[in-house]
Amino acid sequence: MTGQGMAGDGEIGGSGENGENMAGAVARWVTGLFAPQVLVIGLPPLVGLMADGWPGAVWGLVASALCGGIPALVILNGVRSGRLDSHHLVDRSSRTVPLLVAVASVVVALTLLILLGAPRLLVATVTAMLAALAVTVPITFRWKISFHAAVSAGTVVVLAHVLPAAPTLVAGALVVATVCWARVRLTHHTPAQVAAGTAVGAGTAWAALSAFGV
Image (tube, rainbow, N blue to C red; front, side, top):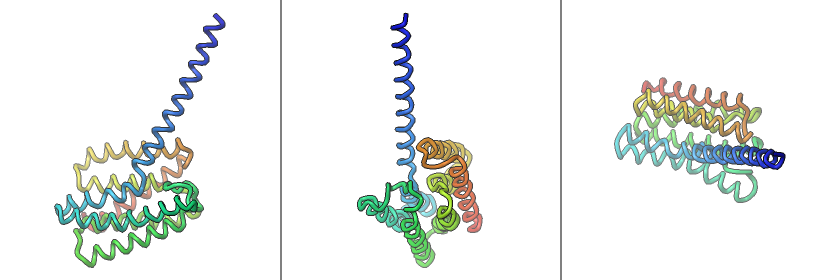
């Protein structure tokens, strides 16, 4: 009887530990799949395609290279050199240079898109990116607001303008909630930080799109 009880305790403990490991693995996978760099690179070509067909998709690739590609390369170089902890920029103090590069890249992209006559919806999307950075960057210098939450929420709002709105918002809300859970599960953010990121991302995207009348 005692032996069975000990075996049962061991099984329960092992099961709980496996469950913790599985949850952590899922959280890391979600964090990587929906990383800000991934979404910022992937969103513009889709928006451009929906707005103006294949020519719009080419415009979107230009926006992706500038808004997402350049900051991603800077972060990758920082990680390889040891200046940055990871491409998720977990350490808030290490975010300054990559974020300033991101702001500059988005400004350059937006300027080129406007001057060269890119589709209006794509210009509005890049404007939404800049608006989100304008709010989140000053905050992150004092408080670790979640860029994962902000970018994923903003992406959902933009996609709801180019895809069927109701199902996109429902599915998107589930994705954003999962991203927020993952960031908290990994102890990279608090619930308040992911909630703030979600509000900023969704709010700035909606405001930018509304300003453009799209």
